[in-house]
Image 1 (tube, helix red, strand yellow):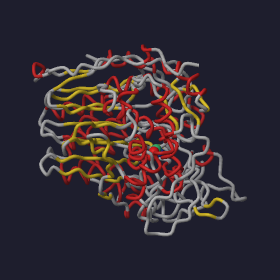
Image 2: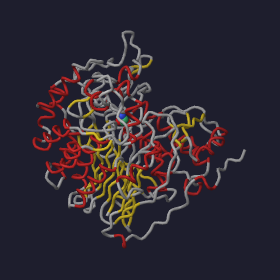
Image 3: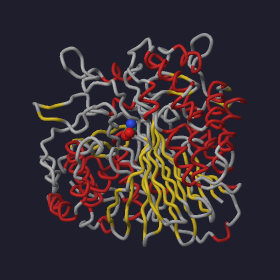
Image 4: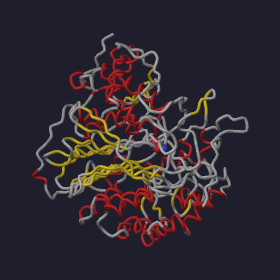
Length: 601
Ligand code: GLY
């Protein structure tokens, strides 16, 4: 069988255009108006759906001064207004996040957690902020086990108060703004307050998700009264929706910072909601809220070709696993092979499997156990492990390696389930500051508990439900105060020390594959951000090669099966929002699988 896919499988090479003539022109990808943006939603499927999606191509957006790309047009427009009026990327981040929590409440919000990778143009410093949720101090390692010590069914664990961790996103926004913000904190909340007060139209994606999640989402009476009409029917596309409770919460945050959120009335409301949950009451306490702290951590970076690819280290597995995939692929000439070659996908698929094996064994919250961060990205270690890819067919057995480390380690493999939700946005401002932020409440609509006009996360289910396997401890087991391992991979790739690519995606543990693929497409295959995002996805985590259903990638399936991969055609709901920073200006892309747009000027 020939292992060559048709030449028409992927879009042609981009031509990076000179964009100096575009100065001061605002451009919106595929969506010159809100109405047009909404028309792009026909490819959108529920976040946990396995249905088909029909991708659409979009033109890349070019700009000179600043750019923003995110998953919802209202959020992008609000952020663009901040940038247009002299705000910086951190100011825009606060506005975008508060708006996303309103118009895309299923994916992220102030009841959840986030990771920020930030390049500060003035200091030329790249850093990361960890706003991941923490496990309540009264949570026990067996929180997600039944009386027989067996893991609960996933949704039995998710829905209700048990899965709720201490939210980190408000603290991240405040900390980042105190460090780097430019406009006044309270002004940044106005767009979301106004939209929550005056109303917005339920988008097609939100309506579809409410409908498909009806049973779980209607268990909380507050969520039921918000997301369903008086007859109990799910809100439909275009329904005007106001959220005065959220407007009040945002007014409080605008006026008082995070004081009431972590130490006052909002904290009390959150804790009461979790502890009194009719379904699965939880143990989050006022002490947990008061103790919450954002952590500034060193970025985790890997050399790939002429780039330094940097992202969020533990408790995220994102940068480590993306970095391992790229490091394992470095000796192979993907540029010559090209995106149409099954050999490229054999290498990428097995590099991913090797990286996921290490991820499952070693990666977790470094504040709670030693993780061999340097060893996992050590060039000699990766070069040695990369030799496994010299095989001509899919690897038969994939197991974790033995990275160098100063500690004795005996750990078992993790079993955490991560289903796709989450949101990613990328921002470059006129000053050269860069924000890459991935933000989440974990599952679609999180714990399904609504308080203060926002959804509470279910991030605790990102821990392994088991603490041990055959008596050997699992690194990502739950512990009080610990942060669950994430896959979120907000990324900034530097070239010659300055930012060149900003990318990231939602998608549960497939985030890692989406982000790695977007980087390979832009770096090895000369794709523009939009072309990289538009490429059909092929993602391999644990052995099965997921191939994006309904796309031209289906034609690779026979070749990959012949190489020995188990294949699976399925919907692959990424939400990549990427920007390339070139000598000729900014080039952006938004993922057609969601509702996002790009605006630049
Ligand atoms: N809950 C999604 C993630 O953190 O990866």
